[in-house]
Length: 297
Ligand code: HSE
Image (cartoon, rainbow, N blue to C red; front, side):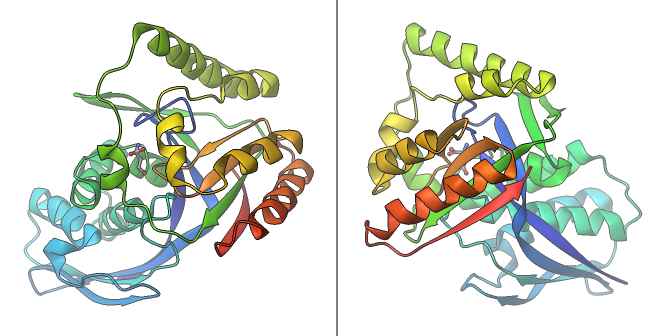
């Protein structure tokens, strides 16, 4: 028995929702093939596209898979092949795609004994390995699709959020690598009450905007006064890309996950394409190779 699946890239944080909000992309993702095996444990048999460890305990798909396998009580195991299209350290949930894909495929092959919430918990073990923190804002949207809110980590509570029909994401990936663990270390662990008020006002506004398909409200809410000012320093050309995207009609623009990818949300494909052209033009002058893609969310 074998299953072949698409594991979507994801945008975590979405400006105002650090560690709690994320969305799944349909234009970029890994392809994973998973098969049942009589041999116990998880074996990563092949990884193409990127240099990543095949050793089960050093691979996020292996670690997430082991968490599921242990709970399942299954006597056998699984073999996993990954065609890795999402670059590690790109900021669009590379580790999450592998972790979420592995547990989703295994659950299918076992006849779906686990809920999506349990799959998120297993996949978070992969995130723990990749970034030292078991954050769920990439694995949750990878497993649920669309936008998801991590309402609480303890107990884990995931809330799927509806996506307005005309919402598109444009993502530019400058080809430098930023490790999530590194870009977390530079963050302050305390924030002022004033910044907290701005941030939860925006997060509430964004969620309300998504529910009501209120694009102006979505646009007004896509702001981050806490993380972005610190992390954007690591991303050459961030400020120019952001003002270019806003001037081209994007609703908002920010860092995708822990960077270096930058995302913009737009109403309609035409605007998303205009934003892509602006990003292309601006980044051609920066001197770092990049790629750009557009997804309907
Ligand atoms: N919320 C995480 C962070 C996502 O920003 O560190 C990492 O992709």
